[in-house]
Structures are given as structure tokens and as C-alpha cells.
Length: 339
View (cartoon, rainbow, N blue to C red):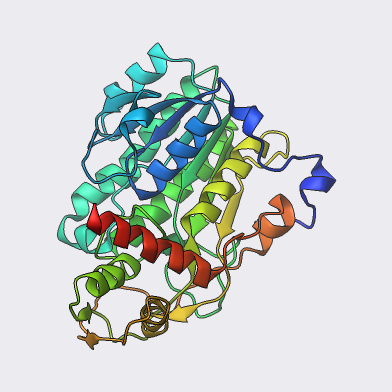
């Protein structure tokens, strides 16, 4: 997929538009997860009618509150359950779909690869098959990952790079990504793909991820344990910027003829694990205190994305600096720990 040289203005597209979503019926799979919860709250604030599907409904660790739940039609279940999804589409005239439900933790994928493949691969084709049979779906945004690319010597990764994951989580994302492309190329399904860098921000309860884990270590006044050698390179992007990218893509998918396209969303400022950890300590006004184990396995050493395509085609731009985003995140976890 070549980077388009056009922009939103050239295509006659619009920037993120709150009124666009008022009254729209939107399905969000994985709505209670980190990304899904932020997206769901944003859509609700825009007046959308959200149907949320999640294997863990009404979980304790989520930013979704009681008021939010009054505006969500909650469905508890697994996207790998074809009958469950078919029933949702039969009972609701869904216009927009955000498919975020997936096993998101690499270590859990190593421990139970079959469950990862079921959720990430079968769950994707189940949902797309329901969309294919629906007469009302106008746009589908599917969350892939930078891990879908596998490992490449050339950096940063661009959307036209081959997808060649090697380990369970990476392979599951490569496969799901290709399935979306198959449904577009074969059935002209109005679906687009997002591939993001390492997302962080308030409300991430997967505390094994380096940003929240570092912050929690600081709050608890305990040394941080870095499982890798600290030299793995990633690009870190704030949750609000990712949500804006998802919504912008969904709003303009049909008008911009973006079906079948993939978009990287990233800041473009890669850091080593040690660098992001020490920056967090600095912003938190704490002396670095960590131990490097050097025991990480089956992870890509150097990986970061080019978001030139999203910037040129969608005119998407990160709005929050890394330092400001980390401060917001640290403040949130401190407040949460005291509540």
C-alpha cells in the first residue's frame, strides 16, 4: 500500500466531527479494555448509541462509570462465539464497527497460544462475516498492531511492509490483518486497519506494560523490574491521540474511499525501555530505581512506525507531547491509587 499524497482537504473530508456521531448505532468489541473504554466514552460523549461486547462486562478495573453504562447496550461474551455476534447484528441495525477485542498481552499469548488465536483470528473473521451479511454497516475499523509486521531491518515500518509475525501474538495480528484485507478485496467490505505504536495513558490496567508498571513502582516506592535488557526500542503514543485517529478514520472511511487501507499511528520518536523509564522517573521527580533482568524472549528488539500516511491522508497529528502525556498519566495513577 503506497502512501497517498492527498489529504483530508484534497479529498473533501472533515476533521473529527462530534455531530457526525449523534444517534449513530456503533458496535465496539472489547469496549471495556484500555483502548475500548476510552473510545466508548468518547463516542458516548458525541451522542452515539454504543453496543459494547466484551468477555468481561462490568469489570472493576475500567474507566467506564455508572453514568456511561446507562448509555451502553452491554453484551457479555466472546467474539469467538459466532452465534453471539450473529444475534447482535440481527437485533440491531449497526452502522459503524470498531473491532478492538483481542488478547493484548504478549506473555499471555506465549502461555496460551490457542486462546490467542481463537480470540484474535477467529474473533476477527466472525465479526467481519457478520458485517458482510449486514445491509446497514457503513464502516469498520479493525485494530491490528505494529507487531503484525514482525521484524524488519529497515525502520521505521511503513504500511506497505510485509506482514510476517513469528510468535503467537505477532502471528495472530498478522493473520487478523490479512483477513480484513481479504474481506475488502473479495467482498468490498468497508473496512480499514489501524496499526499503532505502544499506547499508554490513564486507565491502562495491564500493569505489566512498561509505562503503568513504572508508575506503579514509583507510587509504591518499590524498585522497577525490567524483564528485558532495557535496550528494546519502541515508539510511545498517548491514548487520546489514538482515539482521535480511530474516530477520524471511521468518519471519513467511505467519503475518502479508504476501505482496505491500513494506517500507522505513532509519534515517530522511538525510545529504549531505559529511556522511557528514566523519563517517567524524571517527570515524577523521583530518582531512578530499577533492576534489569535481561530475560525477555520472543519479542522484537527494534520496532517503530512511520505515520506519514496518516498525517498526509487523514491529516492526523499527535496533539499531546510525550512529556505532557506522561505527566497526565502519572497524575491519573496517583489519584487512582489514593481513591
